[in-house]
Image 1 (cartoon, rainbow, N blue to C red):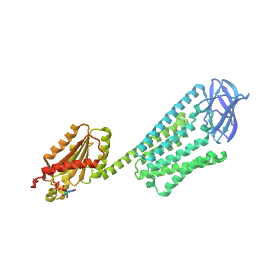
Image 2: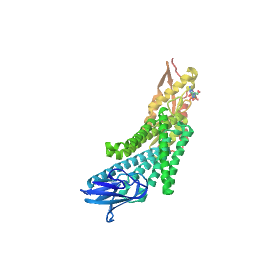
Image 3: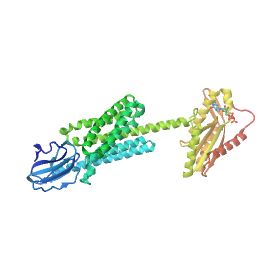
Image 4: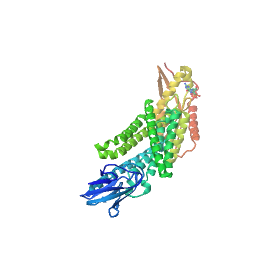
Length: 490
Ligand SMILES: Nc1nc2c(ncn2[C@@H]2O[C@H](COP(=O)(O)OP(=O)(O)OP(=O)(O)O)[C@@H](O)[C@H]2O)c(=O)[nH]1
């Protein structure tokens, strides 16, 4: 057993209120098995254990400050420099228990850090794929939060013991400030606060987050007593931001903003973990110690899922807008602009990958007559059905477009010349005896079809089109007969 005799008489493991600066705790030890005295370094900047003769105990390497207590009945003095006037609970465990706890701690923290790094990279790459920098805020947020917990939990003390940089409370607060500002930025983008909130509450959140960051930077450089006051203001401001973000998220859920429910769930988990942590001590020391880290990991995962959902939604919106702009309003094929843009990229692929380009130009014969005799509406339906037929004749990857009036174009990239010829033959065959049904009418359709099948790389789409167009006109000229022969039956 080990008791603290001064400044207060309590059992080791119970919290002792430290005062700011240097102080000495006296420990009365009656050790029957080699043990370890250990405590976290979050509010302690210096610590040394000395015996009554003034001999210094060498510390062990680990996340927490640790000293081996040999067997015997003796008094030792713990000389501590505290950077905050808070409670510290120096614990005494048998060497085996202390080592086990240290291993568990390193496993938990390694899992947590690895998980955070993987999520930060995943969401960062998602953001990059759609060129949306808002998602980098998630990566920055998770990285800062992970760094804060790694410093707070003293993980790096195992490799860089006694480093002032790693254990300074001011440096930890800098990462806490960065975590707040990046989290606020990310949720602002994810839930679209600019459109959700009125300018003043959004500006208040932005300014408060920047204020926290500013305080986190200033407290690094001002004298010690000032930095304590600044860190207290930081804490209050952070609490206000958390409440503000939760309220804004509730509003987003009410307005059915995409992903808002997931964000609210993540925030609730964090909030509950923060509150419950205080009461978990009796239930499970493990949960008391790691509840917040587990909650942060779950929160990070839920927010990553929300980010992925948002990326999917943005991508779908973009595709929909692109399709709207590039599809023909009448026929289920590309319009001229959309077809030309897509055709240009097929030409580029052909230049790098090789193969055969097959460009087919289709102009319906005597289409004017259908309009004139059956009406424009029937003409429209005829064009839409012809486009559907072309879609069925082509493969998924072929580009079918309406080039103008009653002209259609097809561009296919084929592996072999035979494949290109087969596609052309398929289209020729279908149009050689085509009758389509519009309402109760059977309308025979004829078309002049010109084509170009080329192996050589092409840079000039217009030239290729012109060649296919010329071939089509040549065919039209030979097919054209003086008498009008459309045989339209009711
Ligand atoms: N119903 C309908 N008709 C259209 C549309 N766009 C163009 N047209 C008509 O399609 C016809 C195309 O003209 P041409 O290709 O010169 O006429 P054609 O009768 O097919 O003559 P040939 O091609 O020489 O056989 C014109 O009468 C246009 O009014 C459309 O969106 N809907």
